[in-house]
Amino acid sequence: MADTPAPSASADPVTATPVVEATGITKRFGATVALRDVRIRVAPGESHALVGRNGAGKSTLVSVLTGIQRPDSGTLLFSGKPAPAMGDTDAWRSKVACVYQRSTVVPDLTVAENLFLDRQSAGALRPIRWRQLRAGAEALLAEYGVGVSPRARIRDLTVEQRQFVEIARALGFGARFIILDEPTAKLDARGIERLFTKLRELQDKGVAFLFISHHLQEVYELCSTVTVYRDARHVLTAPVAGLGHDALVAAMTGEGTTGAQQPARPAGAGVLSGTGPPMLQVTGLTLPGVYEDVSLTVRPGEVVGLAGAAASGNVQLGETLAGLHRSRSGSVSLAGREVRAGAPAALAAGVGFIPEDRHLQGLVPERSVAENATLTVTDQLGPYGVVLPARARAFARRMIDDLDIKTPGAATPVSALSGGNQQKVVVARALATDPRLLVAIRPTNGVDIKSKEFLLGRVRAVAAAGKSALVVSDELDDLRVCDRVVVMFHGRVTASFPAGWTDEQLVAAIEGMAGTAGTQRTKGSTGNASHH
Image (cartoon, rainbow, N blue to C red; front, side):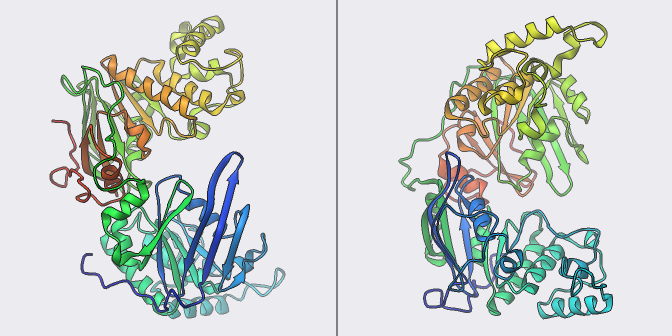
C-alpha cells in the first residue's frame, strides 16, 4: 500500500469549527490517574490518529468521547457545543460513534435490522414495517456506498463488510465523527485498502475520523494529523507529513533517537542460557485468523519474550502452547517429545501456565489460597484422587513461604488478598508441578512495582534451574528479563532481538515498523525466529 494517495481533509483543521474538541480532560480511577489534563481536536473531514503505548490513556479518552465515562475535569465540545448529558444515548449517538476491533453488530440479525436497531418502528408499541425498514436500509447503504444487501445476515458478511455496516449505522444516527479502534486488526491487505478508500470517500463528505492503531505505517497512509499520549498525558500533536518515523516512536517511548538511552538487559541471566538441545520447538504452527506458520525455539536456561500488540496473535500462541487452543497445522515438542493438543496434555508434558487474566482464568475467588495454589497437583495430595486436607495445607504453606504470599493463612479466601498476592498464588500454582516450560502471559499485569520485580525474578529462577520460560507480553518491563525477544505482528513473527535492545527499537517492531529504528528483522516469511 506504498502508493496510496495522500491523506485527504475537506476542511482546514486550523480554521474550521472542530467536530470534537476536548481540553484539559482529567480522569481518575481511585488512586490511578488514567488521563491528566489531555487534549485533542479533530476538524471536519479530518482523519486524525491517536497513538500511544498501553496505559497511555487512549481507551479512557474513547470512553470519555463516547459518553461512557464522565471526566473529573475538563471541557468536551462537539461542533462548538457542550457534550450531551450523561445517559442521553440518542444525543451521544448523533455526535459520535465508535467502531471497535471486536464487532458490535448482532450476528443473527440482518443488515437492515442492525442499521435500525432500537428504532425499527415509530414507537415501542408500533408494529415494524419491514418493507419501509428495508427501503430505509437500502437508501442508507447506497448513500455511503456500502455494497451489501439489507436482507443479508451479519454472520454471513466479511469482517470488512461488518465494519462498513457499523460505519453506516453511525452515520444513520447523524454522527459525523467516528472513532476507529484498531479497525484493520482482522483485515487482510486488500480489505485494509478497501477500508481506507471508503474512509477517504467519507472524509470528502465531511466525516471526521479518530484513528487508533498499533500499526504506525497506517497512520502515515491514512491520517493528516497525529496526537501522541504517553503515561496519561498529551505529548504531541503534529502534521503526519512532517513527522518522521523515529520522531513518532520517540514521542511514544519518551526516548530520543540518539542512542543514549539505556538498553534493556536480562536481569540475572544464568550461565545455562540458550545451551543444549531445544526445550521447546514450535514448527509451522497455524491458528486460522489469528497466527500463521509460526516457528520458535526456546532452549534450556533461556527466557524468551514473545512481544506483540493486541492483534498480533502472541497471546493466543502462548495459550495454544498451554493447551487452550487447537492449532490447525504445525507441531509443538517439549524436551524432544510432541505435545498433544489440550490443556491436560500440556500440563502432563510439563507446561506451567500463568494466564493473562487472573480474575477470569487464574483464580477461583471463593476458594482458599491453598485450594487455588494446589489445583494442578491434586494427584500428589492423596491416594486415588482423594485430597488429604493436611497434606494440601502443608504443600500450600511451602508455596506461600516460597513466594512470600502475604495471607493470614492457607485457608483464607483468595479474594481477600491484594492483587499482587493473588498473582503470586497464580504463579505458585503454575510452578507447583515443577514445569519444564513456564508460559507466562503478562505475568505482572495489575501488580505494584515490588510484586512485579519479585514475580519476574521467579521467572528468571525457572531458567536458572535449567528449565525454560516464555514471557508473552507487550510490557517492556516484562520483556527486560528476557535473553531475547521475538516480535509478532498481525499473526506472523517479524523480528527478533538479542539482549541489548532499546525501548525505541522494540516499540517500533511491536507497532509494525520493523525495519526502522534499528529493528533486526528475521529472515524470510516463515516466522522462524529460532535462536542460533
